Amino acid sequence: MLLCLQIENFALIDQLELEFGAGLNVLTGETGAGKSIILDAIDAVLGGKVSSRVIRTGTNRAMVEATFTSTPPLTAWLSEQEIDLLDENSVVISREITATASNIRSRSRVNGVLVNRQIMGGLRDRLVEITAQGQTVQVGQSAQVRDWLDLYGGNSPMQQRQKVATSFNAYQQAHLALEKRRTSERERLQQFDLLTYQVQELATANLSEPNELEQLAQERERLNHVVDLQQMSYKVYQALYQNDHETPAAADLLGDSEVTLNDMVEYDAQLQPLLDLVRDAQTAVMEVGRQINAYGEDLEADPQRLEEVEERIRELKQICRKYGPTLTEAIAYYQRIQAELAELNDSEQSIENLEQQEKACFEKLTQASDQLTQLRRQAAANLESRLLSELKPLAMEKVQFQVEILPTSPTATGADKITFIFSPNPGEPLQPLTEIASGGEMSRFLLALKACFSQASTAGTMVFDEIDVGVSGRVAQAIAEKLHQLSQRNQVLCVTHQPLVAAMADRHFRVDKQTINQNKGKKANNGNGEQRTVVRVTTLDNLTTRREELAQLAGGKSATDAIAFAESLLLQAANHRRQEES
Image (cartoon, rainbow, N blue to C red; front, side, top):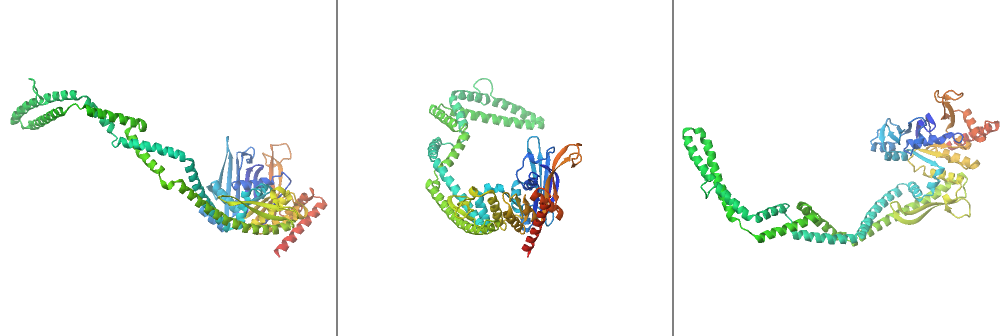
């Protein structure tokens, strides 16, 4: 139940605080007085769409705060969202709307905790249900009618609908997999042929060593310079080990140095480490000389091997140009396309298998949809009976109404096209409600529909925006009684121009516009200060003020006859409430 609504700088409202009560809360006032602005504020604080126009001219920030009573299910849901209660019985929701130079921003809080749109949507469904004549469009939408019918049916249709959604998702995935395979079969075969050729080519190339190209380049250089290497190795051998000329080799010079140092050590033992170094150097030089000599003797020209190396280098460079640019990347590509080729060749993903999977999923979806259709037919029969009984007190005793359920292609919500069909007069054929119902008939139908859904709805507050437009007399009285009946189970907020409805209110508010001096915040009775229009709300909490307001609604002025009529309406409403209580 909505306890309190605080509004700041919202449209024509500068500051406003309203306290609502249980039962039927009615807002009245002249056309354009600002009644709908209050309902717009309720919609906005619960996450409704807003634009920069909702921010009062001359300001850049609007604020709406609503306080609701909590219920155990609501408390449990808030706990799941990790939102604590401020106290045991209330939930405070606020929305701040700020205008900047380029856009509009808003922030919503629940008990001081910032929340996103998804949470606000879930909270809105649990708190308030708004009904207006504008819902005529929704009545004509099969998807909306289907949602209403499932909600009316209770847990069984909703649970089965979830099974249908799961089955539809599985079918859709299977269907998409099949279509993807079908549409890509030609490309798959082309890709398969290409990868097969590439795998064969790379397998023939026998790629295993990423550094093979560098190693072959070195071998080619060696084979191309065999004679030079032989000559240079012999030159090194002579310089280090055995020189054919009179010039001594390095090994000979080191030998002479060793003899001299050996003599010196006899006189000074400190030179022993130097002697050891010379001996080591002589040994190393002699070893290098022997190895370089052996290297030179083993070198020989090998034209055939040189040709093989050249051919292998050409082959690897060709591989790199096609699959590289480096040999390492070519080897990695070879490994990757082997896996891709195996996947393309996977027999388990054949078209035949995918077709079987799709067929099985579709059969499961069809079965689940058929079960949902049966549950909907049961709910439709109950709704037809209940709605007709709700319409009779609204001066629609002879109306005919059916929930038409026609088969359609399965979707995530079933395989039904659902339409409300209606005939207001005996002998006339049933036709879609939105095509033949008058404004007054649509108002009564929506009211009766909400009466049917009131027990299934989780919302504690029902809002009706001029639901009584287009009716008068006995019908208006019937609507007033129906609204009061609904208010015994749910809090009802109603904007109305009907004195018959307003008279039935448990709490009555009058909305009007006033012109004030902006600087003083008082009614503008003179030219001092900037004049601004504001919306003001007065609680009509005594018999005199209510009588005067009802007289205004009935006759447009507080004439004697209008006052008498207003008194009769209040007396009639009081008698009706006493009869219901008894």
